[in-house]
Image 1 (cartoon, chains in turn orange, green):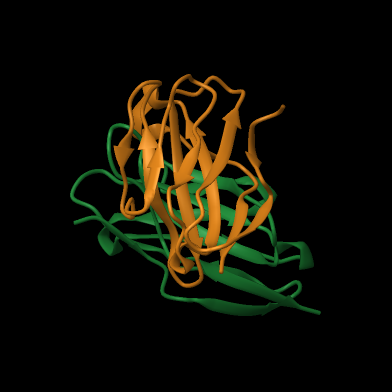
Image 2: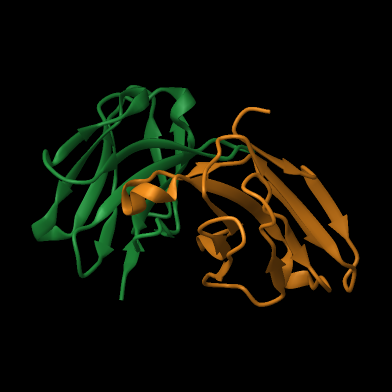
Length: 115
Length: 113
């Protein structure tokens, strides 16, 4: 593993189904983030975690949940998917100790279609 | 309230021509600014970042950006574009001490022969 991996690469999901998007990083970064990317809207923050064991809500958290049991993994769960959750999802991480100076490193994304 | 605006949704440029992408920000404190590039089907890659000091910062792939506090701008430039520069470009503002970002909506760059 080098950097951030996300799985699956893409998924088609029936509305109402539960889905977990996986994210793993090997850089030992404390902070991790989930974004969704939609045309014309850029990237919007769904949830974040500043350190293992803590999580917070971003700009568009409704319908999503996260957990951070350890440093490396940050799964995003859609409890009951709806078509408006069709999007490309990106996981990112950064070294939170340096605060606002930190760049974020991004995974390759998961393309999710909810029908 | 903090915000990032990229006024140009789409730019078409000829190969070899110069490129400038605009980014305007609104933030009450010292802005920490980033430019990322996203090639088709890929994640985001950092091009450059600005924290303080020199207002002209150099990045990878021949890109540079100029920070102008008086205009609340952080425009990205490249003197001569290559076909491989066709991508979507995002300006981002670091908004809190934990490093959360506010992204602009992005500018899609098309390079013609």
